[in-house]
Length: 203
Image (cartoon, rainbow, N blue to C red; front, side, top):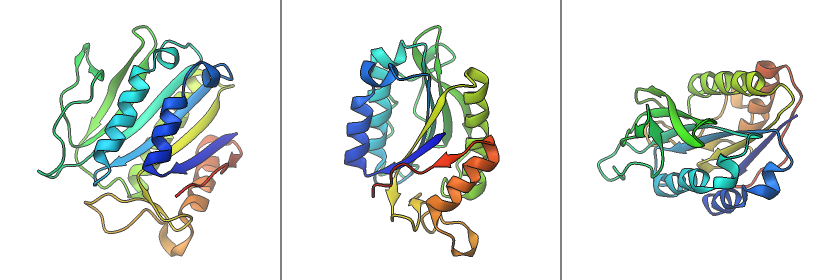
């Protein structure tokens, strides 16, 4: 079962702080996070990633795998500070304004840059599909019995869409006027061949 949530920034921070022994005990858990930070929420989303990194109970657990899509603000008004504790090829990862896929290194107990892409619009259905195709395959390869817990971080308008990349024109909403989260849920099932359940929608 895939559980999908969209939280406000304040609620998302509370969720990130909650990840720890009480959560990972119910593992194996593959935590897929889609963070649209290419907007005025960048600082809060960076903080959310740093909270995951600093949670040693989660990072040291063999039953918890975080897979993160991160798109940071590329404006001169955004932060250019690196993410504390994020690693790349064994060294602290520098600031990068494009898209990054982040994955836990179980051997080191760290969060690492798995892939870097050029600047793109994270509200794009193609961009989203590419990430989730990789992430769900990685979840199944890691542990075929793992529950997949999906979190969307960014701006939102309920069932009308999510995201809010300032390089784009609108929140993510599929063509034809279909509701954002409803269409995403259908896409999850197509990618993973599993039932998908939207267990919560907070905006």
